[in-house]
Image 1: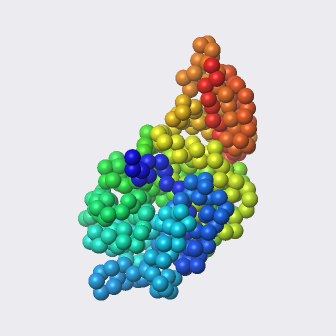
Image 2: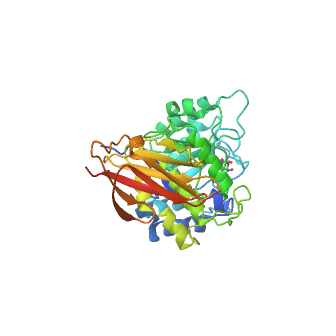
Image 3: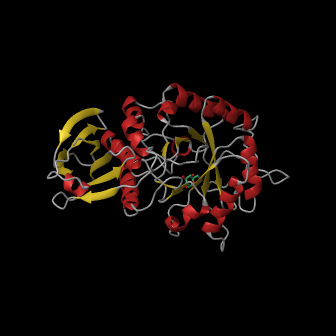
Length: 380
Ligand code: GLA
């Protein structure tokens, strides 16, 4: 059977959060090397994605997009070949309006031509933005257009819609053929931004499923307040907050697209990004959504629970409050009956330790913004 494109959320690295427009052929090759040599590809991070600012400011005389001569003196094809030879896939950025958000040429009325060029260059993923849309042109039609053009370009290309959650995107995006869709404004490197994106996603827990995933935006794990993008850079998060950020994105079926400079990452952040227990939850083949359990006696705490394809359950327990809190869930709420003798074997997905068999409930203490994630298997 041929691979279904984006059956599970795509994983990779994107240039925007950290590099902004400050990259070139050499930087891309360095990132590809690091993705392979430092174990990211083995964990599933496969797409190396160039965001905005890769092109010349004008199309050529045939109306074709032209890669920046300064950044890519030999064009993009040798770079893409280098990326492919590493076993990675290559992603690029475009826009459904007349210009990209940073003012480079957009694909409006050039969809077929651009899709064919991307396919000819060897592009595997297109992040497709929403700036400079001609008035009167509806987003659903414009995303349908590019989806159709890509699907008929002769190459499998993931379409990652970036429409910031406007115009009730969740109602129509799956039917355009897009594989992922942004549902919020751009992430920034602080807890406030992470929390507000998670809060919005939690209001739409019913969404999700194979081949069309709700994209909560690129990860800021490991940025630590650094990077040269004024739109993303902020004061940074604590390690516990980065951990919670990654756990939320993993459980909530978001693409896992790293945004920090993986050439300079600290060990703790690398461990968060390479947590195979959390990645396995995110990449579960059924791509199911979570349900939420909240606890009235501990305001600001909640659990997100997700059934996985091997019969196990994943549960994240979160503390969004500013106090140290008791939090957890009862097995009753999971649909598991202690009276019928049902029990669960627990694994701590952050420490990777087996915790033995529990009955009836799970109750823990969490610091502000902290989380725990468990995977639980039937134990009788
Ligand atoms: C928009 C997107 C960002 C990034 C920039 C590039 O703001 O939401 O993720 O792609 O455009 O200009």
